[in-house]
Image (cartoon, rainbow, N blue to C red; front, side):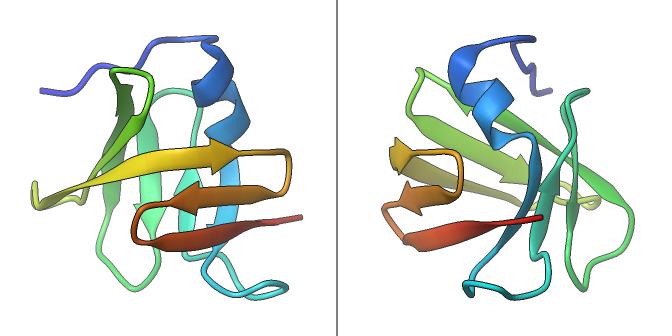
Length: 88
């Protein structure tokens, strides 16, 4: 069971759509209710920020990945596994 803190600074910056390619289609979309959509997967998953610097994403089937958040700005999310770019 994952919980997402509402209104938190990191969480509010994450809400929206992100792509692995600058100017690309959305690969991940984070909703403010703690659900998320992962491209090319079935159904909605969940997401949460743990310890202010770990992004946890679980798909519909419960498969979970955890990334360390290195930095986040309005248009760029740098994780230990790579960079995501905001999709407008």
